[in-house]
Length: 189
Image (cartoon, rainbow, N blue to C red; front, side):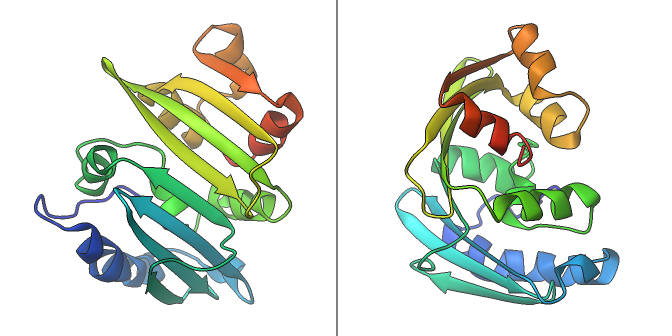
């Protein structure tokens, strides 16, 4: 799901209003029955602003200013990267971590997230710039790993058009840190 928030959207408007609207649209167009009886909790930090999101049963969305204690996922990104993703200027592959949808990949990502703790840092190459995104899984600071990947390769990986081993072998994905953790998180990418 690509985002298309207005150019002048604030971080607060995006999380409190825009995402709620998108969730309501998603409920109408996607099969979210896989989330029945489940809860997805995540925190998003953009430029010091922190918002938590709780989705219950795939239908009930709650946004919490300041975040949620013990969220399943904590994502930190710069305002520049967030704004380009939020307004649809770039497809980042991060959209599915913000608002899970009705695809098999979303269900598999949710299921994989249940048992993984640690921190994944993503150095995403966007043109000549390097954007660092941090993903803390289930409150775990350790183990930790870092990947460096071009935006278009990350999107292809997220869509299932390629895989991690192929990208590593071609030199398009560089890895550093706990290898067993990286193998576990590949289900999330």
